[in-house]
Structures are given as structure tokens and as C-alpha cells.
Length: 83
Image (cartoon, rainbow, N blue to C red; front, side, top):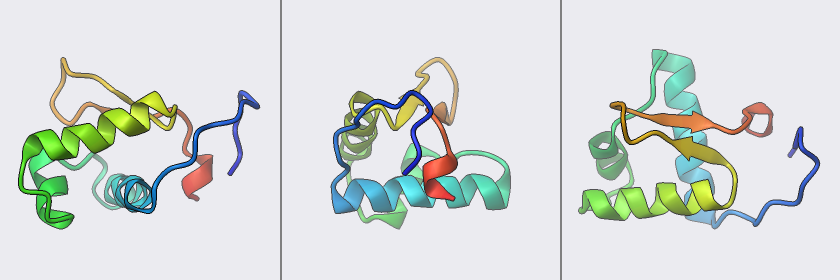
């Protein structure tokens, strides 16, 4: 994983890594982020709060940024690590 800020990041759980890679793939294929509902369906997470919990954990670890003011407001802090 390359990190432009050269800081150590907390490691992702296996599930978080799967979700992050899926988000990157979805953006590459569709040009936009998946919705919370789409993530829940894909990973069989029944509650939207469960999906948001995973996303917030990844945000705390420094892998992505969430913008609650926009629909599909998921941004990568950097994308090189998923390529």
C-alpha cells in the first residue's frame, strides 16, 4: 500500500478491505460511488447503520472520507492502494 503522507494507518479488517475494494471497483465501472443500500445488499448487512459503521471505521483509520451533505458522499483519501 502506498501512502502519500507516509504515515502508518491502522490495518483494515478483512471485511473492511472487501468493502473498500468493492467501492473502488464500483467507481471504476460506474463513475460514481455505491449507495449505502447497495453496499448493504452486496455484503448482506441488513441495517444501513451497520454499513455506516463500517464506513466510519474506515474513515477513522484514514482510508476514506465521508461527506454527509451529499448523496453517495464517499471519497478515498488516496486510491493508489487499491490499484
